[in-house]
Length: 150
Image (cartoon, rainbow, N blue to C red; front, side, top):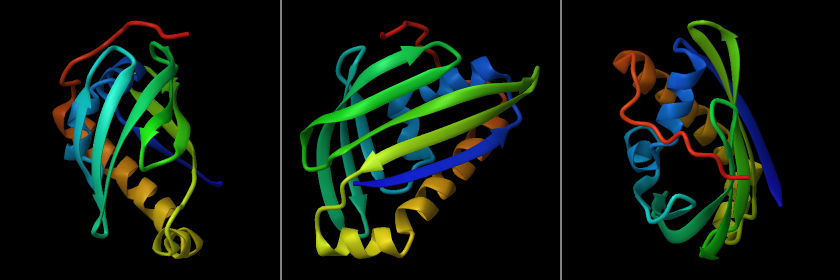
């Protein structure tokens, strides 16, 4: 298993950052390599990714979701094994720290080499930077889901 931790400060209130993060189907707009996400139930998402020509499909289950605080997931079916959490930390009324922690299992030799070279860490950092741009340029979320999963 490999791990990655990255964080970024975004210039929006904590509820705005959290609400946007719950809109999984918008992830392709700021996450490189994510082609499509389908929200199948409140706790089940189906992902289609293509990272450096490696096409993957998998299902992920939301294992914990606390409004304005945390979203955690784990893969349950498909070609990818990972688990992680995104936490939201109020810095002040208009700034939030978004922290992503993820454990993943690189399968192929290409993935293992990419992991050793820091590809996943750089990609995660870039995804968070694009999330920052996405939410700050909008100034508001595209939707919200305020339910809790415990």
